[in-house]
Length: 477
Length: 123
Image (cartoon, rainbow over all chains, first blue to last red; front, top):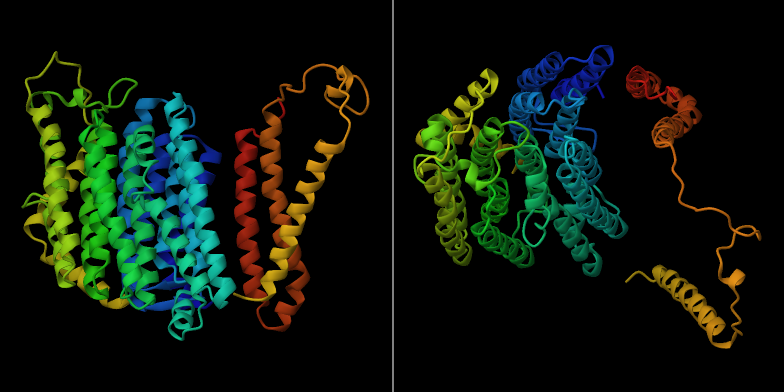
């Protein structure tokens, strides 16, 4: 460990220090705005450490983490998403008037730190550590409001299922170690390629790791927890859970499977292909009958992870580019959608039921337009970020001539348009009795405007992001 | 399969089988003459009194959690202290010292936080 290593680890160290400083500031004095500012500055400081880290990248720091452009891009993405979460949560926490609102920010920072470690991990130990740091903070975040039993129920459900999935992951890692004596991704891959693995141990081990990761990604058939947890968690946390925690696991999986020499083996392709098709179908069919917007977005996220897996299955450079593009578009869209849900909350309840959105175009035209944009982006309509993301996934699927997956993707996109448009139709319906509207706070308003610009900007002018992602994709493969 | 695991499997099978067989033989062969006091909850040979479900102060839970937290700190400190001389000999003394100082420092901040929050006050 020398100076260069510390520079490379800068973003992670800054994030960890930010969490500690935020905790100290709460011990000194409780003040929600001050705590939120300190946490936000911590995220900015971590982002400022990114260019310095990029100068020394790629660099392997200990056997556990590797700081390269791929990791730094994902860290930047997570930092931005965490920042958006803190801005949205500021509004949400003030509305709820909970007694202990300040600790929320510490938990967000810690969960983000875990996600960043996941994106850099090249070793099963750091994989597991990052995953646990990220999830343990999330249990508390989901159950944060103490106003009703729904939040505690969602938190408990996530705790139990995430605990079970961690057990799967650990068992898989233990089998890998028992058979090959290696825990680093590269060592694992080298031992496999040298033919040292016992098939009866290695394949169950990989299956267990994939099953554990699929729980976190909420890929069908491991998706049962998603609707309840999405609905029970406060809207900003739901956005965070949908983006950062899933993106981090996907980044770690990408690293693992790129190290394993791509996903050429037919077993792997069949497994992930089956997961992709079942989650597209399950997500979209479940979403058809939902009467709650948060549950609808939850089911749609299951389908979207299915689309991402189609991109995941392509050859390494194409897969990296397509998955990363998809994730960026998905982050922007999901954060914007849950941002709208957050600011529409009024009194002591969130705007969750579809009926809350009836006639929204006439009451809150800007918010309704933004939510429409998000839904169109999720459906993959041109001129939005979601269209290009889906286009990338399709291109990745056709590049390997996986026609079954491509057909499933197209059919499911058409299916999904139905329920997205149903929400849009409800928003355009004549308005019922006018409810007193809460003003959108300044911070959340600016954030939503930026997200709206990105949503359309990425759809109209994708070249800048593509160039950035292409530069980082070469770092990994 | 690795041969050395077979003995473990045999051990597990014998342990399970022995337990099952003995318990089943007990039920089949043993005489059964239940009386009221035999069927009652066993409480050190005395007549059971009161309900086992009692209310505990929730503070026990907090204290227990804090105890585990700082107990684990000692678990990490102990091997570090034992091996510290070897690290110094290997030229890693400063590094290991700073590492542990960071670890203990973060825990100290945690202690300051729970203290300040009043989690250590009983009333």
